[in-house]
Amino acid sequence: MHPITLDEVLKPYLHLPTAIQTALIRVETHPVFRALTKSTLSVLKALVTRASATNGAAIIRARVDRMADEACVSYKTVQRAMRTFREFEWVLPVTEGRSEYGVFESKRYVFTPGLCELIDLPTKSKPAPTVAQETEMSDGAIYVDLSLKKDLQEISIKNREGQPPTLPPTVTKIPEETGISATGVCKLLGVARRADYKLEDVYLLAKPYLEKIGTNAARCYRYLHAMLVNPKKVDYAGKAAQERRNGDTDPAKALAAIAARCRFKRYYHVSNGIRVRFFDGTAEVSRDGNCALYAGTQMQGLYKGIANGNLVEVIE
Image (cartoon, rainbow, N blue to C red; front, top):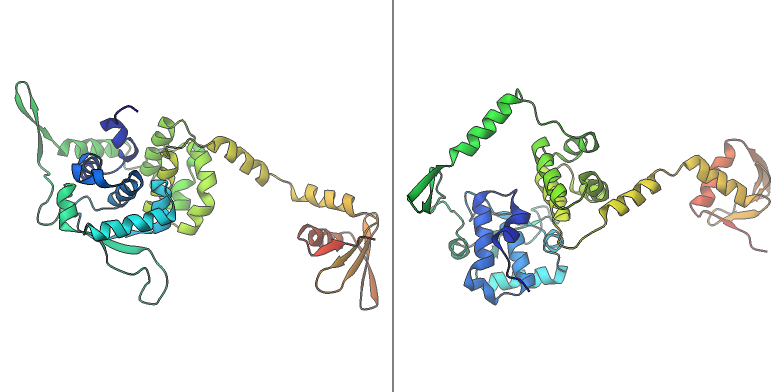
């Protein structure tokens, strides 16, 4: 087993602020955390990614199921890890997971000053340096102006005349449907490219879950990012192709297949007592002694009843 490198530690978190990246490095390398299991350490890193880059003691929100997905562990493992953090007085709950109206919501937690000190998270009493960063070289200290990054961003926006970056046609709907900015989608495209995935495939598979989340840009971004950096290789392309094939099914062809299958057969309704005798393109429908002949568009309702399982064939 080869020793883990700094690049491997930071690769899944390059989109996060520098202060959070530094905290994650401390989690991975500080001797205090060596007593934790690998799964518990993964849960702690999932929590740290939610921390504020300017005040590590600020309240954060975290759902156990979401953390389990991000850390690639079970729901029970996250619960055990949270109990461990509470025993060590690293992470303390602020709420019990219900709103003031009794509705379930994401639990709120807070990092203790002790944990912030351990992982070097900035707090109100110990803010992060913002002016210059010092690096020791052979000729002495070199000071790097951290405002350069902001200047470059402003220049980039100016060159685009204030317009957001242009997205490929395959992902243009993501900002509108999830709230993720165009810049955020560009970052996800880069992560997908490095992982040898296509973002449109991952988004198609994640769509049902993202619809439950709603237009919460931060949570949608984290969900997609977690799928892209999953250490377990997933065949997103194959699953997306299957999903597209299922979505391309022609309803008219499906009904035509049912029509061909039920000709000259008898069916009954599972709940209302209707009896149906199919012919070629027509059907005799009887109920309570009354009989009617169905044809044309009336037949579609009968075919849909078979498709939905409401009409069941009479086996003689």
